[in-house]
Amino acid sequence: MNWDQIQGQWKQLKGDAQAQWGKLTDDDLDQAEGDRTKLVGLVQERYGKAKEEAEQEVDSWFARH
Image (cartoon, rainbow, N blue to C red):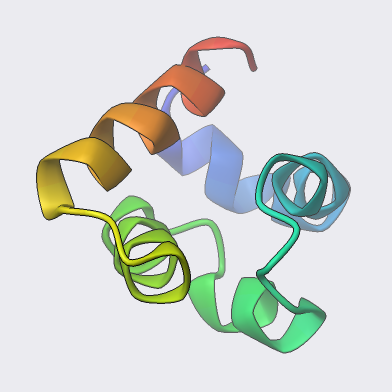
């Protein structure tokens, strides 16, 4: 699966993302729209992580899907 597919199936995958990052609200995830850059930014912001760490988490989550 690539990020275009993630974006296309975002409504279905949103629940998995929320299970992974419980601090992200439905509004946050709606705003991300399956976009990797937006999701990384939200994880970084909500969890106070460095950009590289947030990117690794998002990429790890992505690899499971």
